[in-house]
Every structure is written in structure tokens, then in C-alpha cells.
Amino acid sequence: MKHKLISVALIAILLCMVLGNSIACNPATTYTLTMSSTAGGNVTPAVGAHNYSPATVVNLTATPAGGYRFVNWTGGGTDVANATAATTTITMNAAHTVIAHFALGTLIANVPDANQPPTNTIPTPNPTNFCAPIAMSNILEYWDDVANHANAQNVTAGLIPETVAEYVGWFMDTNNAGSNRRGNGADGHAGTYARDILMLTLGNMDYVLWDALNPLGTPPPVRPAGKVGHVWTGANDYATGFAFCKAEIDAGRPLVVCYRWWNLVPGTNVTDPQSGKVISVYQWGSQTSNSTNPPEQWNGTYGEYCIGHAVTCVGYILNWDPDGLGGPLPSANWTIVHDTWATTPENIAVPWISPGGPWNSSHAVLL
Image (tube, rainbow, N blue to C red; front, side, top):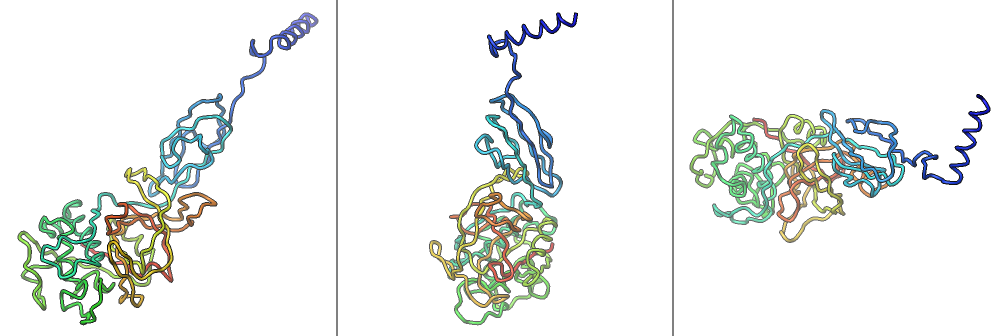
């Protein structure tokens, strides 16, 4: 019996030598997909090694944990269909080690993204350099028309943000043409001082409380029909920096952030898996004091007297490297903001730099 088994084995070997793989003597070739993940989420297929036949299309899914967001896939090269999509595929044309990257952060959805110039309804004496009123009007419209907060109803009187910004600009004394309660003096500066962004007077925001109970100095423009006054307070930050901004976003409150200059270099685009919004990643260019098209100045002493560039901050991402190791973009804490120019995308991610700039101050409203 033993000799018969040996004979059968010899015959099988000879057949394989003669006929080759036509009778499946050799095991089929496979490629190994090794799945990995940074902290902050799970992946499908699960972390570990998985074998697939050549040309197999494998579904990849990255699921962020609470408070985290998916960033991108690395390691699959062009075999990954979409490296920035949380749900995508990889075609197994070779062995791959694929890593899903997650970052801690959040994004407040549906904050308006108004742009300069204002509508010139009042009319506004000088409708340029209106970034700060526009940035604040985004927040007012968010609480009134998007979040429908009980303490914000009709605070914008049903006006579009670009018109609200005209009234807000009066209370900010933007371009030195507005409320004498700001105390800027007749220095003829263009723009809004950082200290005037929040419009705080006696603990209340002048525009928000703008009603018969709000004592004003020089009368502002006529209050729009339907305008309701509310009691809000706020906080200015010139020292804490990113921690202050993060705390406000964590509380669900968009805020105004003022940078010392605004000269950006476009990078790449990523898709936020939670909201589906495209985030345009930029990095800082060299310091400059002004821009054209539209014209805007950002200069002055740093701190509360700085005339910088104001934007509406709607989110952040911690310890993020948008283009992976070795790319030109830095690994840093990033803020996601709505700029106030029509020439820039809706959601812009910029790295936080402090001290030394370009961050200058943050301004939060508390309903």
C-alpha cells in the first residue's frame, strides 16, 4: 500500500511538470492587503493582513470615533480610487499597506459665508475693508436663521448678511465712520481695530441690543423694521490663542478670528466625511500689509489695536498633516474658517501660528 501511494505521488508530479498550471498544481498568486489606522477610528477590512486574488476590487471604509474626522488614506498609491474619501476602493494590483488617518476636530455646519462688499444700503460711506463686519454678520445670521436660537430671533431683521454687515460696521466704527463709542479717534484709518470687533459696551453688544433700551451716543442709522434687541455678552482674546478658539468651537459657537495678515498659498482639497463639505487647505505666504482686488489693508500695532483680516471660524483639526509625511504642508493645529472674499472657497483650513502671527485675536459671542 505504501509503494502504491508513492507511485501515485510520482505520477502527479510528472503530470504537473508536463501540463504545468493547467490542472492547478501550483497555488494561485495572491496579493496581501495590510490594513492599519491611526488613533481615532476603525477601518474595514479590519486592521491586519488580508489576501486577495489579483485585480480584486476591495471596499475600504474608515469610520471616525467621536470627536474625530477622517483625513485620508496613504500607502495604496494610484490603486486607491479616492485617497481623501472615507468610503472608497482599492484594486489589488500589488501588495499594499494602507493606513487610514484620523484627526481630532470638529466643524460647525451651515454657518453662512457672506462676502465683501456690503450692499451699500444705508449707504455706507466707504464699503471697503469690511471684513470684520462681514465676519460678525455670519455669526448673527447663524444664530438667528440657522440655529433659530431663542435669544437671537429677528436680531438680523430678515436682512441678508451683506446688509446686516453695514449696520454692524457702523457700531464697529469701520473705516472710522460710525459710532463715537468706539473711541478710535479721527485718524482716518481704513478697516476695523481688533478691539472694536466684538462691539462690547457696558457688557452688551451694541448692534444686538440695538433697541429703545440701548443708550447710544451719536444716533446710528434708522433701525430696520422688525429688528429685535437681545442681551448678549462676549469675550475678546489676545493671549490664549488656539485653546480659546477650540473651546468656543467645542461649545458649538462660531467666532471671529483676526489674523495679522492674510496672504495664503493654496494647497490641496479634502472632504469632511461628517458634513460632506470640501475643505480647501492653504498655508501662509510671506507677511504683507495690504491686498488688491478687493482692496484691503491689514497693518498696525499687534494686539487690540491691530487692523488685521477678520474671518469667521467654524471648526478646527488637531495635530493634522493634510498631505501626509514628507509633504510641504505642516503637521499642526488647523482652524477651518469662512473668509470674507468671494474669490476664496467656503471652508478654508489654515495652520495656527502663535506667538508671532499670523493669529492676532479672537472674539466670541455668548448668547
